Image (cartoon, rainbow, N blue to C red; front, side, top):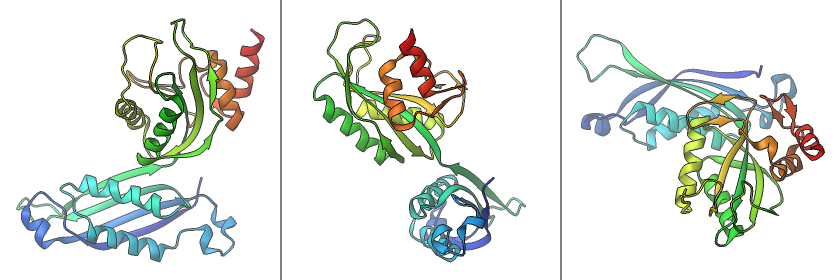
Length: 272
């Protein structure tokens, strides 16, 4: 369990709401923030660079509220959490509650609040392309991932592989990347699909040629079975080229369903 820095009842002023007078006149909000950092407080060793300077965090949140307007409290709360991660590199988890006093309604209640919790997730994503300028397609995908709050932390070499699945087509260029992201699995999957769409992927033939393919292999150590999200990837343990690239960047990445490390899966596959 990581140590936590807590900021309680921080008074900020903002211009958020669906009523015009809220956007013109503004009002006070009260913010509670819990921040977890990478290191334990024991390891900080009196070095402020290893923790979060809470005075800077307070000023940052106040200024963000002062300078940014949203219709919904949900939106400004989510946005300020994302911005905290961008501004403070030692942060690994943020829980933020923003309380809005009931100034503009006649119903008798004190106010309402919105809570957002986000933490950094380690994810492994496989990329492939066998149409057009394949290497450019992969590089474009890397760039779009970074633009969508998906930070690439490790990247395997790009390798050429034969098609998988039996459909006659050109060879692929493939790679595997390790990323850190605040997106949950469904958000991440939707983002990958959006990137594929931006790069003009067309889904015509199963196992067929594609300008870009983005697959979530592993997401932390989670097992997820939903309509559009299956994690770990259902067939990754049968794909030698995927496991080789995955082992290149982290051979100890763990398959929670099969309960084996990636290097074990690769060794077993090569013995078949």
